[in-house]
Length: 256
View 1 (cartoon, helix red, strand yellow):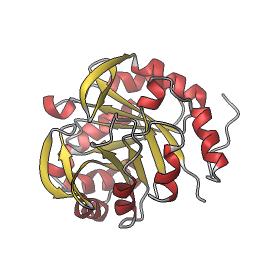
View 2 (tube, rainbow, N blue to C red):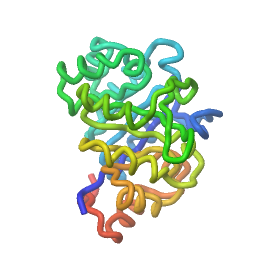
View 3 (cartoon, rainbow, N blue to C red):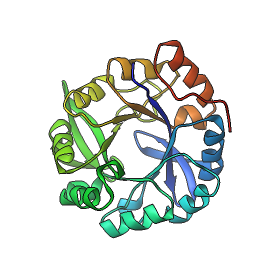
View 4 (cartoon, one colour):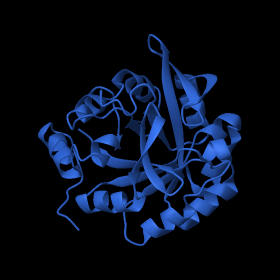
């Protein structure tokens, strides 16, 4: 079985790390970089920072947070929220990010996917998709942190995004996010069946074993975790061991 990546997801509002359910009811957890450093020391493979209200207020305030994190953390960092142009992407990458994730602005202007991909390479352009189930094996794309309907079919949109130059997909199930009920494996499988680029499954991880199905059945290349880490219900080491025990390839880790 191919190697998988274990990714810590940090949702940000202002200066705070927050967590909600279905991307709503946001609760302050603490300092994002204190938590990020903890996950880095535990051996996380990557970090994802998402500004949860950036699109709503037409801005991204993560530059200072990322610059601070980059001084002590040396794993790839993806940053999303409020990235509306190549210039916005440039600013975030110069702050220390390795990749940018775009959702709302990409729906409004699909050419932005191609513009970022051509400027920085497809590996830098992550298409962030917030999906809600609307029928049997049917999901709709939402924007603005799960607030706004788009009428777009998730499968059709992800195929278009890949054709426009996206190099990776961050696939968040709004229905499962924060519920601890496990990933929406059917959603992930439907997407991975249609694209050849890496897909990160996000939303719903309640216990380490939840990653097994979404990887082995859903075909995810990585899992993004928030609630399970923030509330200390499992650490990166425990989750990595579960992956190893089920035959998944994971990065060897001895500690920093």
